[in-house]
Length: 99
Image 1 (cartoon, rainbow, N blue to C red):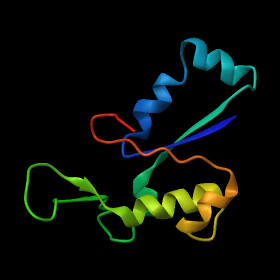
Image 2 (image 1 turned 90 degrees about the horizontal axis):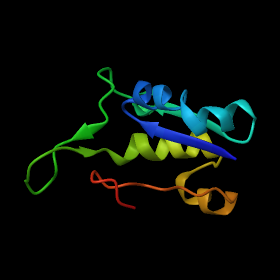
Image 3 (image 1 turned 60 degrees about the horizontal axis):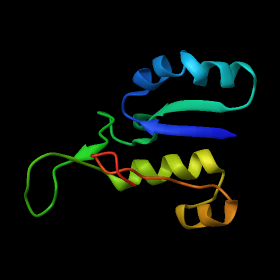
Image 4 (image 1 turned 30 degrees about the vertical axis):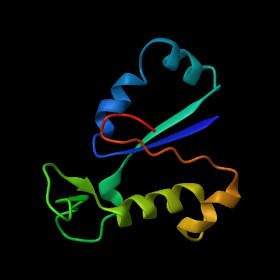
């Protein structure tokens, strides 16, 4: 089983994978977990992955382009709409951690 986590904080997840039951599962070859930096799929020189919400409001939102490019690159699909045909499940979480 393979999990690819796309985040702007990959170091946080790498530390978590080295302890407990997750470490034992990885050592036994039962699961492969990789944390990827979303900034790898940006095109501007500042590697920007977020922007202010359109229409006002507090906070920041992730730009869809780097996120789609990351999903396409990690699934091997030619474009975002082809991911559904690969048998790969993509789970996107809200800022609160909900699906």
